[in-house]
Image (cartoon, rainbow, N blue to C red; front, side, top):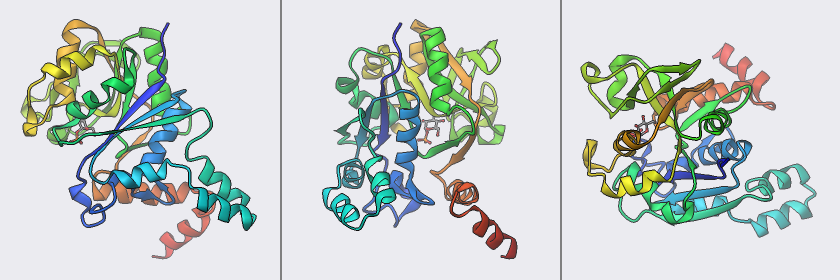
Length: 288
Ligand code: G1P
């Protein structure tokens, strides 16, 4: 039985919705309280047993590469000042046994193209894809842990989904298919950003995928779709004609941190849950 050891993080987007904050810094480096989005995503993968993090980066790559690099001077300085807790936080950015791979996506040709850029690093094994601007909070098992459990049982591709308001279907990949068990359905149909009247259901793809390596050859043949981009959704629509693909409605709260509103909601709610801040911050909000 194979399981999931590699995760691909497509982080080459231009982040135009957050300009000028994202002029020189990747949008995935924006912090929710004290941690960048990309690190929440990396930690979710690590907890799910993934040991190889593959970042497909774009023009603001330096901030992401630097974040996952060893920070000798900073570590020395913190050690000299006996700031042990902070030193540990810095060291834990990449835990022992986890390795990082960086790949350049030189042209912004879409999510499907970004995933294809990771082919050589992934090889012939199933892998996860995590879009860091979909931040998911769980009290129990995280979203990728839940999805790896589904993969382990069915040994087939799994897509993370959530119910959305039909009026928002043109912001998501939308899926439909027969129910298999609680929270799990087969994918019969999957369409990228359909108008509400064309959406097959109210189930939207959220940025979590487990894919078999068959997706790579399919993506090579996938033509440009919605927005003139090579869409991962179109690749998955072709994949499900050759293999079973499952839609898993995960447990957890998802914040769309690719939008200002979602980013602010995540900031407030993570601050309210934050060990150091929760009391003071909740007091502050009450008096605001
Ligand atoms: C991408 C996918 C879309 C998915 C969404 C989830 O779209 O193409 O199918 O529903 O992520 O966040 P994007 O938000 O990058 O336009």
